[in-house]
Structures are given as C-alpha cells and as structure tokens.
Amino acid sequence: MNEPSYPAARSVADWIEKRLAGNTIAFQHPDDAPRPDGVVIEEVISAAFWASLRREEGKAPKISIAFVPPEQVPRPLLFETRLPLDPNVLVRLAPAVERPGIHLGVWRYEGRLSVWGTTQSVPTWCFVLEVVAPGLLVVKYRKAAPTTKFANVAVLEGASVKFIEQQPEVASEAAAALASLLTFYSSAGHDESDHILVRLAISMRAHGRGGSLLVVPQGSDEWRNSIVVPISYSVKPPFSGVAASLHDPEALRLACDALAGATAVDGATVISDVFELLAFGVKISSRRGSPRVDRVLVTEPVEGVGEAIVEPSQLGNTRHLSAAQFVSEQRDAIALIASQDGRFTVFVWSQARAIVQAHRLEALLL
Image (cartoon, rainbow, N blue to C red; front, side, top):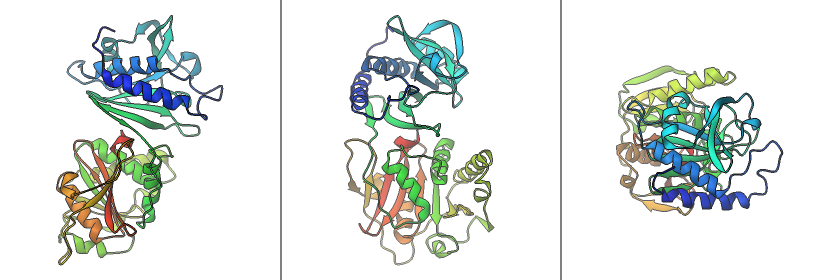
C-alpha cells in the first residue's frame, strides 16, 4: 500500500495489542478466532481509512473487514485469485459487501495481508474493522456464543480516537425499562444488546433525522403536565405493537423500526415503560413554576473521559435542552435523544445525586 501513514492506526494498534495480551479469557478455545498482532491491526485500519475517503460511483464505501482464515468460517465465498489489502481494492468491492452481516475476509499469506473472499459468519473474538462513513471507523470483536453480536473496542474519526471502557455500575431510580440499557452502557456494550431500548436506540440513530423518545410509567398521565396541549398525534388506545412481537424476532425488528420511525417526526415520541406508543409529534414545555435546568452530569464509556457537569446547551440543540427539562420535572421518566450528527444521549434523573444525568452512548451504537 503506497498511501501516506495514518498516525491514529499506530496508536490504536498498540492499545489493542496490549489489551489482547492482558486478556486471559480470549483466544483460549480451539474454535476462537486468531489473535491479531499490532502490525495486522495497523495495516487493516490504514487500508480501511484511506478506502473510506474515496468514492465508488459517487458513493462512500461501507465495508466490514474480518481478520480470519477461510478455513475457520462456515461456507466461505472464495476468490479464485486472492486480492491485495489495498484501498482501491476495498472501494471496488464495497458495493458487494455493504449490506449488514457480510465481511471481507483477510488473512496473511506469504507475509502479506490479502483479501481471500467474503463470509457471513466469524468466530468468537474475531477482530473486525468496520467502515461506517468517510473517516469514521469502528474496531469490534465477535462476542461469545450464543450471541452473534459484536462489541465495540475503539472508534476512530479522523485524528480522534475513542477507546471504549467499562464504567462503574450505573445506579438509577428511574423506570425498570432503563435497567438493561444502563447495563449495556456500564459494560461498554459487552453485555447482550437485545433489550428493546437498545434496539430502539440503534434504530433511532440509523434513520439519521434526529429524534426524541420519552419513556413514562404505564398508566400515568403525569407526563402530560410537561408538554404542550393539544397533542398533534395522540394514540388511543395505546398501541402495543412491540409487546405483541416479543416472541417473533423478525416481527419485533419491524415493530422497533416502526416505533423508532415515529421519532423522525418533529417533536417527541412518548411510550410507556412497557413499550406502548402513547403519542408522537409532542412538544415539550416547562411546567409552570418549575425551575430551569442549568446543569447536567455527563458521562461517556470512553477511556480517559470522566464525569463532567455542564450546562445543557453544551450537549446539543433544543432536543437536549427539552429532554433535560422534561426529566427534571418527570423524575420517573427517561429521555433518549438522537442527533442528526450521530450523537446519542440518554437522560435520567438521579435521586442520589439530585441532578439530571446524561449518558453519551453513540460510541456503543455504531
């Protein structure tokens, strides 16, 4: 590869190599994926980064690269002639592998990394590099069976690098519906992410329009005291499409996508803590006599990023300001906010800290 160096690739490779060397659980089983060394990690990241900045027929490439030999995956699609791991090659192949679940297989042959074909399955602990957008890359690994999901390890965006790190267990007095989402946050995405709110968060972020989702206690109308009436799109009786689909994975996916789609409408979407749709297109309004929220505790599961108390305006646009105000008034509710630029924040009231907490999740949802 004749491209200039990508400095972030070296720092990420060193960090991941050290983490893998200290992991006493990974790469112990014969069926586990091979352990990549720092050279492999750096070369894969560099090739993917330069490929991400190019276009194929005017479109930015979306690619997933898995470091694994073809002998270790079921039913590999093998190229008759292996291809060099080169940005030009990756860009040309991108249209064929841009759909979720398809990986370009890469392995070292005669001292050089080559693309051997594609696979739709990778072994546990497999090193995967995903091109999400121009200059935006995510380093992942395949989690242990029976799940087929991946855990994010690092997020690279140009010269910026975020190393994902587990956080102390997050305590909250909010609705029980939040428990699994906070576990997902505290574990830096390493715990199973099939919970409904995680699915909704991923789908909200994916539609790219930005949106607000308010989760309120079932059977309570208290939330109506913090919104503008009349409501543009009120649902009566509450629609329980998600709850009715819990035992059918495909129907559940469609129900979650439909519910997340409502958040693209201007205003907030309101659901109960048993995932009933109550209203959408809702305008949040401060309750009469309620003090304005002037500080929020912000956390993010990223190495070197500690807690910070900031003004709500520093978090984003009016969606964030309204969400912080709503949670401050409706302390048994939570708010999930997706920004058009990809940021994702969960607001919850902490009784113990007497403050609105804002958990930044976007690094886990890529």
